[in-house]
Length: 82
Image (cartoon, rainbow, N blue to C red; front, side, top):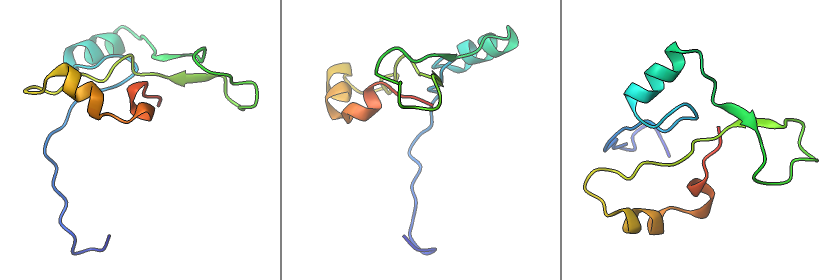
């Protein structure tokens, strides 16, 4: 990629460890809730950190069929970690 390449941003959305919409994220942050948790989904004995922020789900974009959206996402994005 060089400085003359075009970049298109076709949409934005929320996907965090404290919520996946602006209202939920704002509410959780104002209440002091943290999205950081102990990792339990895979072995972590060899990792220096035992905690992570995990987004519980990636919301299906408006206009997409949920099954089609799930089928298009790579496996590593189906359980997002921060």
